[in-house]
Image (tube, rainbow, N blue to C red; front, side, top):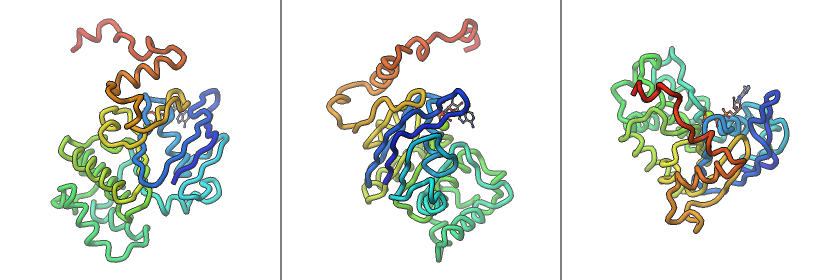
Amino acid sequence: MIEVKGLSKSYGQTKAVDGVDLSIKKGELFGLLGPNGSGKTTIIKMLTGQIKPTSGTLKVHGINVLEDPLRVRELVGIIPEQETPPSFLTAEEYLHFVAKVRKMEHYEKVCDKWFEFFDFEDQKTSLCKDLSRGTRQKLMFAQAFLHEPELAIIDEPLINLDPVMQRKVKDFLRGYVEDGGTIFISTHILEIAKEICTNIGIIYRGKLIHTGRFDDPELQGKNFEDFFLELVSRWKGVSKEILKEPPKGVSALA
Ligand SMILES: Nc1ncnc2c1ncn2[C@@H]1O[C@H](COP(=O)(O)OP(=O)(O)OP(=O)(O)O)[C@@H](O)[C@H]1O
Ligand SMILES: [Mg+2]
């Protein structure tokens, strides 16, 4: 579903993504893990044809993203980072709008199912600007899955959702891949990856420093957080930087 080779993106002197190779197969729930600023969102933007790589090749659904980004965006369900639905539409209008863009027929019932699933039927007719952040994220989630894409790419799927909704979404994502779908998520929340991902990639300063399955013997019986920090700190010996003490005075504020 996703084939990436030698993918790089530079912004001036900053190498946001640096020579990434990645292969994701149908039925995988792949989690791209990495600290803030490590290049997760930049990879997602390139996969979905929103920005062009400095070098490298990308195929999504077998389509060369550089040649036909529109086709890729037609097929794939996408939840970008920190995106919100248009302020001037109601929640229902927004989902109907997306359904029309997706060329769906008889979409009203499908949309209603999403309002029911996320338990905000009573806010269907509210303007998006008046929805809470979490509810707007629910709407973003619904728009991505409305047309039942074979592949969904989600930047931080559970951000802003309460624990009950997080559980629902995790169960939904697991079920989706069990039914043959493929999901790519980015996250820096290790627990999420541990609970739902079949495969992971760990990115640090633009470089993919580990890929594997969660059932790898290397990971068995290990605390994943320790594994992650150990791996990142082994990489160029940066442990002090990651684990450094808060500046003086911060604890006094607690
Ligand atoms: N448009 C841009 N111009 C300049 N630098 C950028 C731009 N977009 C991203 N970067 C830089 O690229 C690097 C990777 O950023 P990216 O947003 O991909 O990180 P991330 O892993 O998604 O982080 P987070 O967990 O905080 O979302 C960072 O150093 C960031 O400052
Ligand atoms: Mg990001």
